[in-house]
Length: 479
Image (cartoon, rainbow, N blue to C red):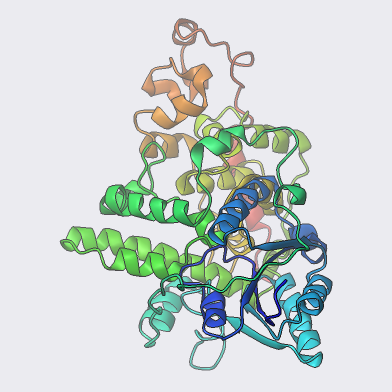
């Protein structure tokens, strides 16, 4: 350790050097920088990262460590204690971090700030994760927006707020050495069973991988985004969500990079459609900030009386992609094999769980939390409540996705289903999305016996739809 009294930059969900406000502010000081990462599963509790997230974090930290010339100090434990220890060890004069918005982090960070300041250490926090901070977008009466469209169009775009332009990586960082650090491997983030080998083929975590993904999307996906984003058989979606969650790229960089691309009126519609999806990401965090009960409680209280079923076997079949509905099973298998699921299919499988199976949305949220590389508390919770109809700005409960018609519409050639459900790949398109309707001679020609090679449908669609609508009707009038 040198004699310089450093500024500690506490990396969290901002695992990048470019457009990192906390790092940039520290670089402007005369003192050296001590970069720090803390794996704090103690305060996270039930919201500690799931298996897929931990795989991503492992590789993202490796890339960040390389970017910082091996100077990243890595610790694990209660962040309040760890930070106090590192401040004492290094004689640091200040701690900088970028703000996070999960309720447990807000509570923890507030205590840490007070304790450090009481001990004479300067603390500065910055916005490195949101285009529009949750406290900056409010209605005229000072209350938060409950509906996305007025939030985005009136509260954000028409309010005079503009996402700041991204800043470049600071040059000449004065990074200090510190002897007391774990290695990334010592965090033991990788699962023991090597289930993640399929995920490794799909993703390149880290700041460089994020920027490459953005470039690829702009060059190959953006021009067809508005309609192509609904096609799981094609690669028109950005797949930036895990990079954004871990802060390997800032939303400001994405916003301005996409916004700078010029084109005709049709192209502008595609561009604006994608930017509005960034707006939905913002709205999810905004909702979590203003309604911290979002991950665990129905925001529409009438759903507290909803007659959810208890069906462990049905839940297991859904998790394993063995429901008998090919588009649902393809989505669940894509999730298991790649740590990702196409957004259109996320809506289909979620609707099937909470409406056709009548299982609580929290079952789905918990499974996604463990298996998605982009598992984000705000986005995951808000999305499940949206499908369930229990959120602030949710789809009406009676909007029930028919997995057969959805599959035919958005996977018209069956490429997506055939890739992830290969046991029925030889079925003609006419029967691919509903194998139980195929005549015996067609099934025999494809060498398929339902119940042996592929499951019979877990439920009957019409009957399960009527059951869901009856359950919803029992909630009215509202509490």
